[in-house]
Length: 531
Image 1: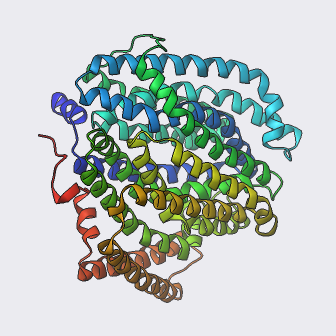
Image 2: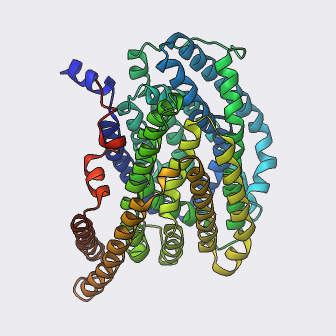
Image 3: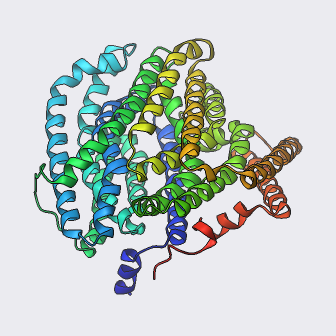
């Protein structure tokens, strides 16, 4: 039995299988993420959650600039090119060098920022009082350990992605969330946010450890190499610089948002982060899963100069993402208050917090489709080893989001920050699509426009049904109790979803069948199935 389980975990996955695995595991991970936020809101006041979320900003900024961009934009295409040519030895040397170099740099920064953090925190949260600022500093110092473990974990995950081994990779965020849930339930009531931060560190270690056995089964052995002269290492550094700029700009935006939130009503930082975590669920489950599964295929097709297949995979992925996120947008906008009450509305999360979070979630949700398409469009450029274009577009949209954030927050509160984020997301997605369409003209044609029209009609009808059903149930169930809200939201969503699926089935929408098959095989063939 153990051998069978090990074989299942370590086996190669087709595009169909990978998409299915990632959808299921990302769904589970996001459900656990919602449970994590539920217990955090239940056991810790938003006053103290402001400290908890603010403490993540500087460690996240460091990790996203130095590591995450390198892996998603540079490492996977470079490593995949060596694997596809049968040169695994060089690929593993590149991986070992990058792991060693990144871990050493992050360890050095953890020590350096330990001493600099008291000077950086006042810039991050200028309106915090002295006690909250001091606690934010201490927690941020501890959280600087997590980028070290995550850097190793994500490079190993990049290796697994290149070999299309997605099972261990997709379970990593699950064990990470389980560690924080454990902390929220058992540690927070005793040691508060400080105890949870140590559970976050433990979760980052588990995130790394769960992926190592599969990498080992592929022949990867860690060796402490620091060979910066390897052409592949230099190539990764060259490709990652534009992406690092883009990730840095995105985190600077969140840095600015945190600073603005510190001057708003108490709990605004927590509300912004909690609402943001909730609204990312459909994009991660329905969009990121497809983008992640299709990225190695796009990279290989680009390396083979197979433009027809590249465009086909990209087009179908885009259409499936829109098909899945259109109804999600309707549900999250129309039932935003019910969603917040069900996930966060208990314990120390008060009614005023609920009102702020519902408004914030609503403005976030208007851009779900745009947010879902951005990673796919960006990966299409990365697969062609073009990291500059999506970076320039991302930075431009982020500058816009930052420019309009303060006036919107001044008039709308924390919900204004969500609106500025959504506006920037729309701008980002639209520009990327226009630029991609110039490269791959076949991603926009009469068939796609006709298909999108059918999805739009089905979505409008679904919205009407959802609104009518929820309004009807409002007078029947007890909306003052958890189960009443759950029944109203659950029944209304189920009825509306069935209407949406039925209409798209009647319309003959291909996206429905592609989504059910969990794949987007180019040219209608299972060309990426394991032989």
